[in-house]
Amino acid sequence: MSTRRHPPLKSITTTPDGPHAAPQPVEGPAAGDPKGVAEGVPIAVRPDAHADDGRRPAAWLHIVAPPSWGVTPSARSGCACGYERQAIGRADVLQLIAAHGEHRATCPLLNPVSEGRAAA
Image 1: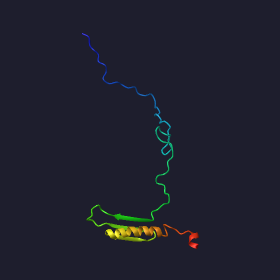
Image 2 (image 1 turned 90 degrees about the horizontal axis):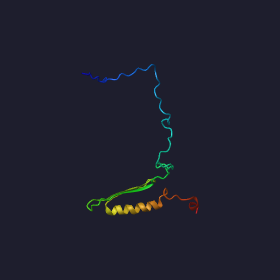
Image 3 (image 1 turned 45 degrees about the vertical axis):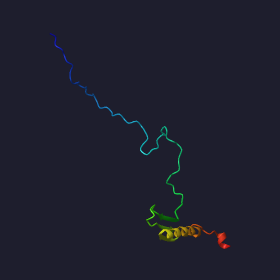
Image 4 (image 1 turned 90 degrees about the vertical axis):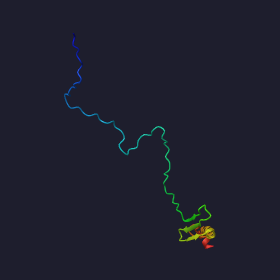
């Protein structure tokens, strides 16, 4: 009978004959450097959405009027010039809304008087 020879179960690797340099990374942009434009990315520069345009609220009216007729509405009116009022109840809230509109029409911060009109 013939004896079958089985292949070795483990392979013996050859030992390197000297030190070899490790593979170096490909040169690319450093962290923070601008990268090239990717496909599908718009190249148009959009204005900053959080840019300050200088506008500030000067007069505000806050009304709390729940949909139920059984709940009493309330309102607060305020202005940067120091005008502050509040009202509780339907009739008082309606009067406050009218007073707020009148104040906005006459407030010196919202309607500055020009020099030509003040001199006349």
